[in-house]
Amino acid sequence: MADTINQATRKGFLVDTSRCIGCRSCQVACKQWNKTDADITSNKGTFENPRDLTPALFNRIRFVESEASGAVSWQFLNERCMQCGDAGCMKVCPSPGALYRTKDGIVAYNKEKCISCKYCVSACPFNVPRYDANDKVSKCNLCQSRIEGGMTPACAKACPTESLKFGNRSQLIAKATAAKKTLYGENDLLGLGVVYALEGPPEQYGLPAKPSIPMSIFLWKDVIKPLGILGFWGSIGAMLLHYVTIGPKKIDDETGKGDGHE
Ligand code: SF4
Ligand code: SF4
Ligand code: SF4
Image 1 (cartoon, protein in one colour):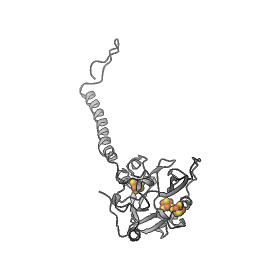
Image 2 (cartoon, helix red, strand yellow):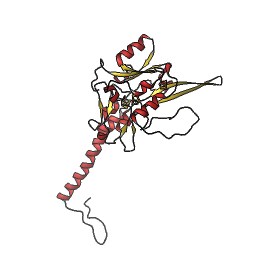
Image 3 (cartoon, protein in one colour):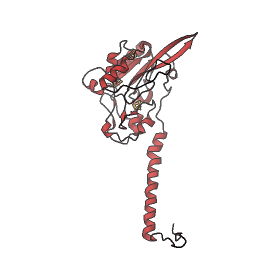
Image 4 (cartoon, helix red, strand yellow):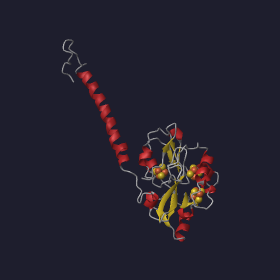
């Protein structure tokens, strides 16, 4: 069961890739607002920088590079937490309140309640959560404090082309649909909070065509791990039972062997 979201008031982003010019003002604005450290990177022969999300980088521009007739061209994708309607990270988190849904539909987090188990990393279909130097979860929370203060998230505010549009999710989708945009994330995982208008197939942008929560994480969390713990305590119980009913194992001083009581 997914947690409940009020779709009428749900906030979200519409990311129109056709309008993005790759200026990365969104990356910088996020760092500035959240006071995160600079990431030390090195040149790998591409303009994409940094090349992955980090604990101090909550959104970044993915450069999709292609070459035709000797000319290089790019498409850009703003990469971040998708604020999934059915959020794998929340589903597997064993610590109440570490990851939670706000009234605006945001997947927010409380580092003080994070127990560093990293289940959320394995459960995220988009490989988003990162861990900071204190081993606590770190990701975009849609500028929760700005939204609650009636402001636009810093990245959307800084975007000079309105490629990042923030607002009521349903209204953003209605406008994009009326403009005949090809949308990604409208219905996946009970609707992503960050919906994309793409100019090609999702795979071209490095997005999964059909995002889903890996079932293996539930198998590990709900079945294998409890069985393992049961097995551990079962062994302790068997040893205690052996001690009480048969007594401690005796070692023959001469042979060094036990008395056969295993
Ligand atoms: S993208 Fe990943 S981290 Fe973000 S809400 Fe979805 S599952 Fe959680
Ligand atoms: S919404 Fe806020 S926290 Fe999220 S990427 Fe934009 S600026 Fe950063
Ligand atoms: S600020 Fe806007 S135009 Fe610039 S890289 Fe970010 S999304 Fe693209």
